[in-house]
Figure 1 (cartoon, rainbow, N blue to C red):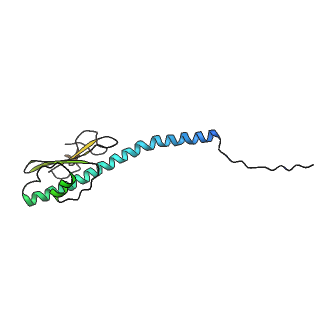
Figure 2 (cartoon, rainbow, N blue to C red; figure 1 turned 180 degrees about the horizontal axis):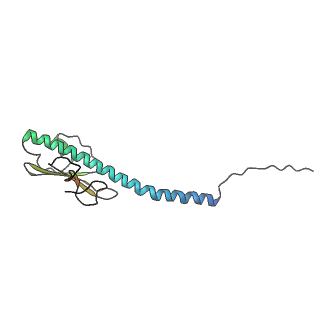
Figure 3 (cartoon, rainbow, N blue to C red; figure 1 turned 30 degrees about the vertical axis):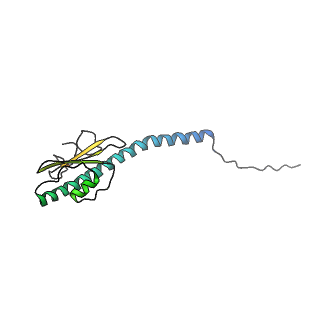
Length: 150
């Protein structure tokens, strides 16, 4: 009697193969997550610089029209938008601005979210990417890319 042998192709992953995949995914996550958080901090810093540059320009227009900078404000978006004629959208930053004298002011944007806190400041000086920086980071090493020089 002849017995026919039917060969079945069983395809499955062994436990070792599954464990190797899990270890590799863990290693990828260990490197990717910190880089992702750093990118988020850099994006918030760039947003703060952009908003402060916009506020700086609005303050200069306000000064040209009134002969003095906008009075000190609590930094709410509504107050910034109303006082300076802006349209800043809430983005998680805390803004404060104060008129030190009629011809000087200081505006700060503080980020207190994930990945570490930092504060960026702009003054009535011209916006500059060389020393003295304006806007600048108020604490050395706190900002992801922006230098200090305040």
